[in-house]
Image (cartoon, rainbow, N blue to C red; front, side, top):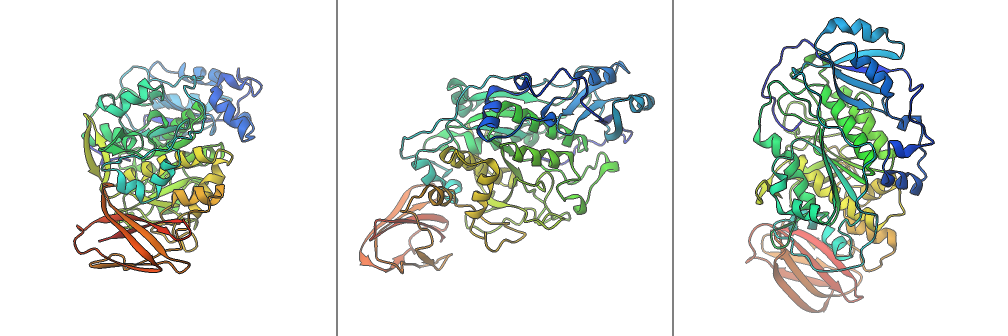
Amino acid sequence: MVGLSLTLFAQSPTCYRIYLSDKNNSPYTTDNPSAFLSQRALDKRTRFNIPITEQDLPVNPQYRQQILALHPQMQPLAVSKWMNTFTVYCPDSTILPQIESLPFVDSVMAVGAYRLHETPAGQAAPVNPEPMVHNTLSAGKDSVDYGYGFAQIALHNGHRLHEAGFKGEGMLIAVIDGGFFGIETISFYQELVNSGRFFGRYSLMPAFVDTLQSGWSEVHGTVVTSAMAANTGGELVGTAPAASYALIHTEWVGSEELVEEDFWANGAEIADSLGADVINSSLGYRSFPDFPQADITYADMDGVNSIASRCATILGQKGVIVCVAAGNDGNGEFYHISRPGDAFDILCVGACATDSLIADFSSRGYSYDGRVKPDITSMGVNTACYYPGDMQSYSNGTSLATPVAAGLCACLWQAMPGYTSTQMMQIIRESAHLYNDPNPEFGYGIPDFYKAYATHVGIHDYNPLQLSVYPNPVTDKLHLTNPDGNIQTVTLYNASGQLVLQYTVPNSPILEIPVTNLLNGFYIGTATLNNNQIATFKFVK
């Protein structure tokens, strides 16, 4: 759900999810997985010892053909191999008994009331796409001018991860979102294409009779992607500027109906077949005003009631770090997280500001069955991003917090390739500032991605707890205390990454820095200690 519904449709169902009973007599077998998984996906399964089972086999194409042959207006909408479902557009409900009587059909469920043209559904993804890059590590280190993107990466110490040489090289991020309109006009997209890091653009959207244009919906995926992929030094550098990207369009703003979860599930399986390492999905579902027969409540946010949530869980278990927006209902009537953010083995992402305070709109946890949700929190207030035409701007929402975190997930996994996706997600949770005392607003809190890296690869020059910084927020004097030794130098940067203050001190364990002349805002600092350790800290003036 990326915006408000703009059109109400007649409530007579036209879209149905067909649950199939088996995959018998399928042309696909687990002995020939290259027929339905890319080589990149197969390499990942081998790398992490993830078995290929019947669950991975595509829905039997013969079953699909028999269903579509029952009516000339029947159209395929979505398919899920993991759920063994086939979702179709069927404007003639008198055909339903024939569908239900087929020997391979378990049940049929109404999921939408679209009105479609008599044309095939949106383009399908190739079943065996060729990977364009391979997982490799970058040893290079360089200084980056993040421009307006500095605050959102510094909040997580992601800039230090970049400095260590990890900017997402060799990692594939799949973006499951609404429209990607205008992305071709943005400079970072051209860089993606020219460098061979663009894995393709896929759409599951059918041909609607009443196609409505909405500025926010049509560019939502474009804006979200820029927070990760932008790479314009001095203006905006995203959190994974060297990663590869695949764009998967699963959302239409013209209506809010249950069938959108079928599109999401199909998109998740496309990402899996491509061999994606990280999924960013800034979408969520918590009501269906255009199909109230399927409306849901907080009690449904248990990770198992939704086809999208169940597929998100499977995706996280098949070697993918899954990042899903918590939703923007924190100051609304619904209040709680949306799905598939309620899934197991994923990272549901809430939103905070640069001052590390929770955004009032960020949807709250826990899941209905009591699990910590959101899992983590990232910057979703005044998050720097690009709109079509290289227009740099700011935007708010868990939709923007999620890609900030997802990009850094890719960089961290690049740095630690020996860990599984579920291990990586747990490492990220453990790096967050409230891990030992989670709450329904932040979940486990704001992750420190460099801390996660340094802790697990044995770097000893990083100890963020060694330096005490107070008061925070500060008005006139900032105090730094190092109980284990002396402070030698202190450097302060503003939210744009500009150097604003540099201090050299005579080896004192306590330092008082006047900040009266600093403008109000977010700052990040580094302090060099007498044992050559470097401590990073943040504060708000």
